[in-house]
Length: 258
Image 1: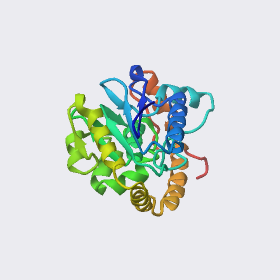
Image 2: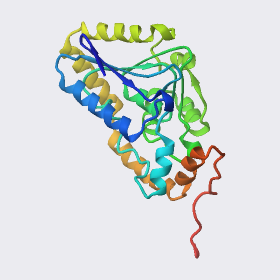
Image 3: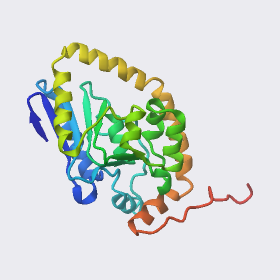
Image 4: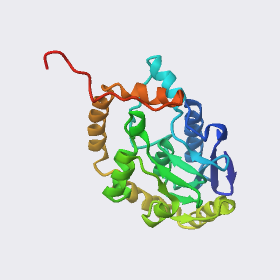
């Protein structure tokens, strides 16, 4: 974490794992966001990834496979937020320096503004792992046309930066070497305005983003638990860890007599 004037820069620093979100990285990101929220001198946060390949490749599937095999926690999102990013009352900018897939795309969705490089691209590939994209299924239809969201969530299609910009998901595309400077310039533009007016504007924006979110979250949880009963959540991450194609079940286990 680095602080430049009134801007906090948080870098996901696991380039060897394409900045995938291990439990350790999530803990560090949560702590960094808490420090940002509590520092009255800090007005805007920027989240970016280390290296030149990835903003974030999502959850650490090898860690998830190990956890699932040992009876650990199941991949059920407790809400449309990661590390308190969406919930913070201060603006957060995603500086997307490479691929942003699965939880990485969801991390960018938790931010208010997204600036990307031309090489960046987005995707939610959870269906290929037997998992529901917990945040994306709730948020993507609120920020993209239904058909585009469906293409991403059901067909696991890629969304290149230029297309994401045309659809309004990305607000600016800049060369890689200019990414952080562009994000800092955007942060300064925000910080120069009235703190009260910026706060109020974000509160109303968040009201729209979260409208009936509790009801949608409850429905998602009912659906995801049924999906988990298929057992595919064990096969998907295991296949990824073993570098092979997944062999999914044909729906749900058959119960004798039904």
